[in-house]
Image (tube, each protein chain N blue to C red):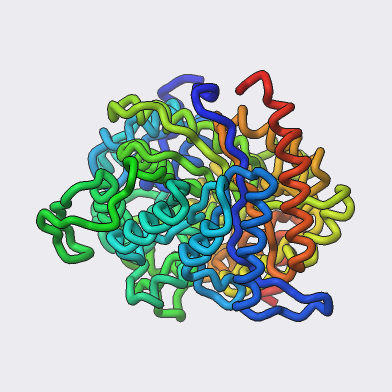
Length: 350
Length: 216
């Protein structure tokens, strides 16, 4: 595995999850978004490498315009890279996505990234008048156009999902070549191959089950890149979690909100609420959750990255109902303790 | 194991679920062919790396000489499947009609019937058995256990034809699960999203109780 040719990157992702006040009442979407800006600024101050916001369109995840929030963070920060996690490209216009992130790239002095994917919710499809049955065609065509736009220069493109472009200059131009683009993959081998085909980076979204089952996806990605004549590209991991002073505190803080959120998703999607036993398994070495003390979380990240052939980890922090204070503490511990410890544990590999 | 005595399984679908089922079937000793909607060349590399031992083929070739055909294609693509392709075959329906996740498909909106009954009606010359639909593809491999293990997970196997149900139950058992038989595709509705066992890891006794509680 070609780990060492890419730097170790340790970032944060958020969906702008609904946040409760001290009395346990949900705060407004507006305040949630202002808090999110503070969280991004703190992440920059702590030297965290990346801050990503995932597009959603629901009361629980009101971050439908992530790029605007990222622009606000960009204006107050100097170093941290900023991106979507993910952009639901199939229900968006690739031209607009390019324009917005190229603008973010300008504001931030070249710190923009985009992760393209479907995400796990489908709310944007009815909202914008798309049929989910067309998902594959929409994604395939729009990724194709997005790749053309990234090359810079006038674009000529024709497809079935949007108007054709003929020698069209799309602005703003990027200053120094394309910004990094990742494809977020939750388990579809064809998405892995597609990322390789376009020479995009691969982000493995591992939100349940044993992370090690994704290791073959990295091998598939490396081989597919070779087959398509692309240069090696980095692999990242997106994993949900929560860091607190001790394992017990992290679990106690996280579990009630996790149970509540999954129960409510389960109700709409028809699956059962997870038991505490299942939660404990997911928190353990063979599960997908990074919930615990800085040492516990660092050990898990440091074990999983090499096993998955990955050089980047984005902790998806927050869980509907956790307070802004708990999130700020999580970010602080991640920046001051988890990241240095992961770097120490992986020192021989990077 | 002798190749001649090896039962053959074709997996139609190379998305999230198909390759996982194919891998488990190979581990259980079956000869496995796998097909996506088009040219096998497109899934050659994926098969070599994710499902070593499986043969990527055109769907029409993959089903030749097989005993069992596993359908793990997106349900909104099911209408594109030529029923003649699987005529005379035992078809395992591992699919779900799951509108909140995959969107509405008109063909499956008639709620008087389970999704597998609708699949069976369209595949009139095949024998349909429903299973492997109510366990997440992310846990299928890890939750396998050898027969007799105390923590072996149970999977429902539903069908109208008892012989077909038995044949599929044997596959499920060999893969690493206890098979709980349900005697009709209609009863197989209990395995669907929103049902008592969808996404729930249960042992045989718990599974039987959960299903019985609904029938009673």
